[in-house]
Length: 353
Image 1 (cartoon, rainbow, N blue to C red):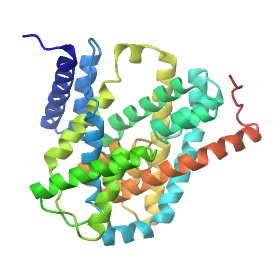
Image 2: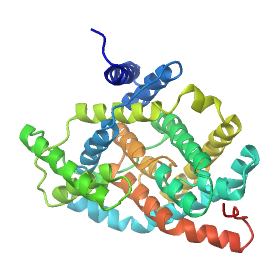
Image 3: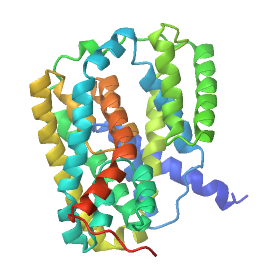
């Protein structure tokens, strides 16, 4: 009996993703399950259609959010409050680094400054697409460039940090491990799903991770976590996230708009270099753990960099604090900054359609 394509495609896709993650884990590659899943899915997507189940990424983000949230505690939250000035400064520096790479992108891609602005600043794929639409910038190239930025950072940063970044003293940002309790874990997953749905209906960006994460943070801060999140669940979530990234890397995606792709890759590498240099300086000046600051200022997405921090044993709460602050700052400040740059005649806005 032949399986319908609606069942066969997801099975083949997730099978390739799982196999890629398993092979990369055997090779001890940093962030093996996510990068391997992305590579396995992309290898299939190059020559045939792929399909990741619709709920794969939301389910993965729920698991990741719960795993992140359990790393918080009362003392950890207090340590984060002490680090708040550095976190806010890092967010502003990251935005400035993105602005600095706009000329690289616009020259290589031959686009206008408005498109370059929303394509290079590391504010998240969804957030930057929404802001670009509000500023009358084209959404398609912005989405493509932001997607390539996430892919570049996921492939470049984990091996570099694993090989070279000193971890430093992150004891202030470490919470006690919580034992695994099956019934408690089921209850956490159900509550996390409900929290995600509530935030989604409220219109919050990335509700599938933030909802469960806030729920687990609250429970952890009061010492009421019913269960820890087992490593196998985190690995499975990495496979779901990697497959979601890999399914975008089709032949048409990689071969179309080559100039834009080259510009996105090179500007992303430049952005990684600038942010890493700033992070090293900030870590030295503040005494915060260098690996966590470098991941916190890395121009990747919050879920991907949080997973990297967990895999490398860096201070997950501190990394999440950096990324959450930057996401909020981008949501509220990028529009006014763009209008200021236009008023100063540093950027030329696109004419209304």
